[in-house]
Length: 141
Ligand code: THU
Ligand code: ZN
Image 1: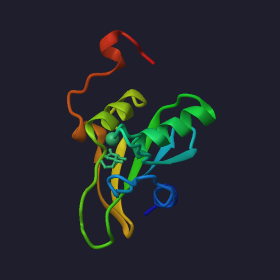
Image 2 (image 1 turned 180 degrees about the horizontal axis):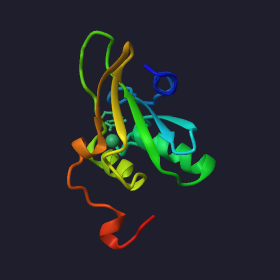
Image 3 (image 1 turned 180 degrees about the vertical axis):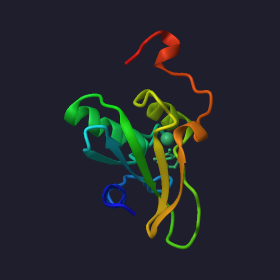
Image 4 (image 1 turned 135 degrees about the horizontal axis):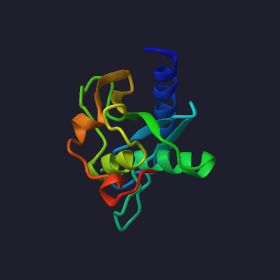
């Protein structure tokens, strides 16, 4: 793992420890790498009516709150147990959030990790092909 990816992993791993997931018991940590080089982490936050904030959305919210909207070059998602081998990728809605903050889905790398490390990676284009985005609304953001 190169240094930036290692930091992305550590921040997502740490954020996961702060998850508020009393209903599902499923904790997720995420970290996004901004085009500025800064890393922002987030975790999932549930409530009794089951309308949850997902870890990826928390991380993107942290980025926008801290430095305004910027493009994202990578996202790390950490979930599961060390030996379960499960791949946890961003859900459909989170993929669309990632799409919103990256104009070229071929350049955004999505890492799925367990507590022991990265399990697999994809481009956003692979996870969300033929996506709908700002350009469809004639917005070149
Ligand atoms: N979860 C995320 O945080 N990110 C995803 O993209 C998938 C699901 C959270 C939401 C909820 O708190 C728990 O995982 C179970 O769905
Ligand atoms: Zn999601």
